Amino acid sequence: MQLYRDIVGAIALVVLILSLLTATHAWNCKEVKNIKNLMQIDAGQGHVVATDTNEIPYYLQRGFIQDEWIRIPGFVKHITVGPAGTWCVDRTDRIFKYLEGKWVHAEGFLKQVDAGGDQFIVGANMQNVPFCLKSSAAIGYKGPGSPLPWKQFPGSVKYYSCGPFGCWAVNKDESIIFMNLDRDCQYSGWSNIDGMLSMIEVATDGSVFGVNSVGDIYTRDGITAKKPKGTRWSHIPQKTAMKHVSFDQGRLWAISKSGITFSCTR
Image (cartoon, rainbow, N blue to C red):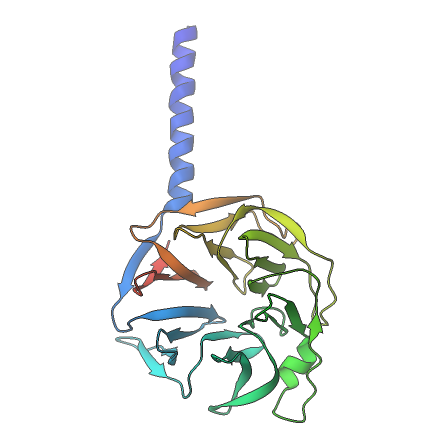
């Protein structure tokens, strides 16, 4: 009888482990063949923007038969889209907002910018100093003359992204940190999170994805409004090393270290 119970228990454990692995790792990824050599990609509120290794920016135009990547004027090294609109920074760290079909210069200097928060903007400068622009200023910016009260935060971050439940960042040592931040850039301070990542992105639904230095993709499990830091990291197996990810509306976008773009769904 005891042997029977042991066997049943072992079978139940195997079934449980397999079900968890299936639920966590069941991603179907396909190569996006009509865009090449992307460097960075960002998705938010149904929109997708990207920039390639020549710093040429694009947006994804949805089609009935095939999606098409449309070139955006200018040259940018990092581009973002979200509730605060479409923003970018160029190779000299100048900041721009996309308004009525053109880039409008905004005061300040950042090496990376994110528009995924509640209509506010965050970013990091070349010295890894984090900044925030409150929602009223980000949404209301129409060009020179509009106020831009950038607020500097303590700490050091090299990549910084926000969503509805908080902001996540990684520093130069690839440590992960979290902060609660509201529309007026009032913050709670940084909290350390387990794990190490080289970049991190927060989706407009609160999902968090990141890539480590060897190109592995991870997602944070258990994130809710009551548990904004989540519970643990889960690995998403891939056949190739990745360098950048973004997630929106059930679709994970990933760029490999060799410049191949993938579109992944569960």
